[in-house]
Structure formats: C-alpha cells, structure tokens
Length: 242
Image 1 (tube, helix red, strand yellow):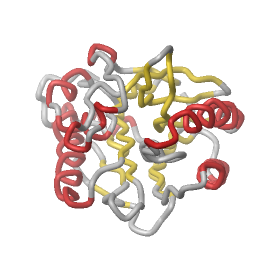
Image 2: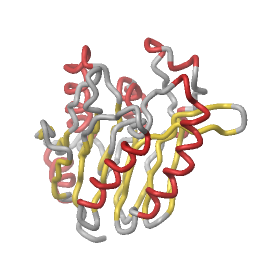
Image 3: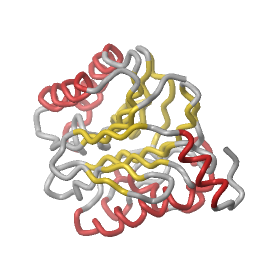
C-alpha cells in the first residue's frame, strides 16, 4: 500500500452549488496523490429542502466531476440523491475514477426534521470498506451519537465523519470524535462545515487520542501511520484486532 496522508476539509457552503463544487475541486487538487480527503456533509448544496429537484440534478453532475479528480485519492463526503421516489443523504467514497462505496444515512436527525425530507437507510449497511489495504468506516453526522454503530466499525484503521453539526452542540462533537478515536483505537477524520450554524471543528484525531483541529485552515493534513494503530492496540489491549 502506498503511503497515505489524511486530509480534513473545512469550508463554507454557499447558496451557489457551482461555487461550492469549485471550492471542493480546488481543495482536492491541492492535495498530494495518495490522500484520504473528507469533506463536510452535503457540502455542495446544503440542506436546500425547497429545491430538491435541482439538488438531485446537480448531484448527478457533481458525481462526474469528483470522479475526474479522484485518481490516486480517496474522497468521502455526502450528497443528496433520489432513488425511485425516495430521497436519501448518501455518503460517497470516490477512488480512481469510481464510486467504490456508497450508503445512505441510517440515523436521521429528527430534532432538525430530516425525516420529513429523507428516507432512512438500514443501519446494517454501516460497514468497514477496504481501499488500498486501508480499513475505512464512515459515520454521517448524527450517526456519531450511536454506540452500536461504533461497534460495527470496530477494527477500522480510520473512521471518517462528514458532518453538518450544530454549533450549539460543539462540545459534543469534539468529545465524541475524540472518544471514537480512543475507544476504537484508530484514526478519526472529522469534517464539519464552516457555516455559521455549524461547529467548524474539522480535525484529525490519532489512535492515542491526540487531536488536531483545522481552525482556519481549509485543509488539515496528517501522515497516516499504520504502526500507530498496532502499537496502541498492543499497548492497551481491549480486544480489537489489527
């Protein structure tokens, strides 16, 4: 496996979908080959409930644009798409010109009324995906609060968390992402929007629980070191293989 870098992105989603796509593409192009890049939840359109037809149409276009820049990179974020007569919030994993994995959000944020607009997926679809020898788990925003989903991703090398997390609960986001890395003894890459209502607390946490947050950096990078995972799991053996 090639040596990877982890990249957490943090930027503001505007009302202009094309502007948001250009921002994301620019940030992706600035990263080196063999980067695992995580962008915020629905970062291309936001939760534009009044224009779902336009949102879904744009997602189809954006899929093709992201494919083009995914060679020698792994890119993860979420997009709103329609399947049949249902609308879902899909986590997408792009790699080498393809969507290697996708799954819809399994735990909708009812406090914010997401269930009125989206269909909820089965949590059985939450699983570890292996790419280039790296075991990757994905939790979409509110899913971070469910300990049963943490257990499903036990054994991951890295868990990525694309989010649109409310600023009023910023301490929860920080505590949960840190605890996820410590409990699962893996890396966590969290990406939250810079929009005013969100925390802006994108960052990367190591298996030892050492956190680094983006702050004002649109892209925070950290070298991936598989040995850090093995060392932590041997040092503090809680029964996680790898």
